[in-house]
Amino acid sequence: MTRMDEPDEFISKTRRKKEMRQLQDVGAALVDLSREQLARIDMPEMLREAVMECQSITRHEARRRQIQWIGKIMRKVDAAPIAEQLAALEAPSKKQTALFHVAEKWRDDLLADPLAMGRFEREFPHAELHRIRQLLEATRAERAAHRAPKHLRELFHAVNAAVQEAARHT
Image 1 (tube, rainbow, N blue to C red):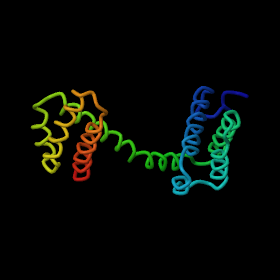
Image 2 (image 1 turned 180 degrees about the vertical axis):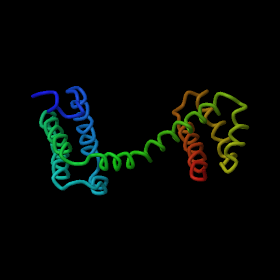
Image 3 (image 1 turned 120 degrees about the horizontal axis):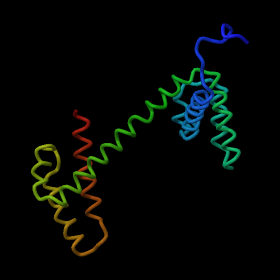
Image 4 (image 1 turned 135 degrees about the horizontal axis):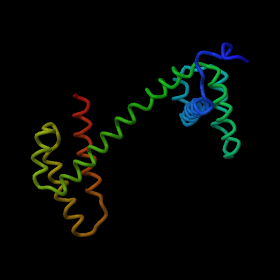
């Protein structure tokens, strides 16, 4: 083969392997979805059947081979729309995780810093501030007595409710 016969765009073996691995990863993410979530993803029927079959496989090596097969099927279809649909499914959960982290930080700040309650009141004026103050006192007493963290969990739920409510309004 001469230089003129080669395609304009050379794709290295490393890059091809990386692209195949990415498709396989998308396929593995499809396998991890629930049946309801999977039903919402638009994909070729052959791919859907391979994914559903993989969900029923429990043996590690057989599951690995099936995921490789799913990756091979995905090389034959346009995987970009499938990956976009997967990302859209995961986006709300990433937002939820971020909000949980914000609530955890507020809870920890409220317990550690007496001035944090003032900042919390300014940022979340709609929150059940009286309830949160009660839970702060109960949590401190609970910690001093080395009891189970019942009030600590309740405090987190109250703070999280305020954070979630604020996120809905922004």
